[in-house]
Image (cartoon, rainbow, N blue to C red):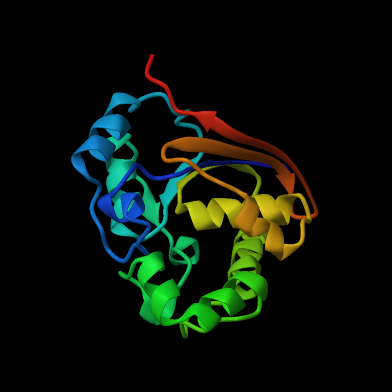
Length: 188
């Protein structure tokens, strides 16, 4: 059965501005204002979902969505790197960062490897019933969805950018997806 999946990347936070692995960070004032400005622009069809992070839940609320948090939509688990800046980690653990960027199965931070993240997101997509799903999820998950939908090698993940408050849409089913990515949310 065909499913339409609309993914929305969350609004801006200070951690994103600082290239810091998120953790539990609230939207900053600019992010909250931007999300509220586009509230009401999303189709209300289907059931709204959200990743469990504070940033995703606050974005869903600001967009006017009564979204259900789903554990399978959690952000990439970067273990002990959570809350730290990438520049700091690169300075103190350059070999670990190099391994993490080069090998999809590496998890030097003690969290989830890119391969494990891809498998988790693929299971979630395969579990979706037909119909429409709208979900506010972290950019890492959207990047993995694109990699999975197009059957790309996991390394492609690092070549994809997902701006705040952008739409990525899939239609299809577990074995065959069509992709529409990067549509901005705009007021009016």
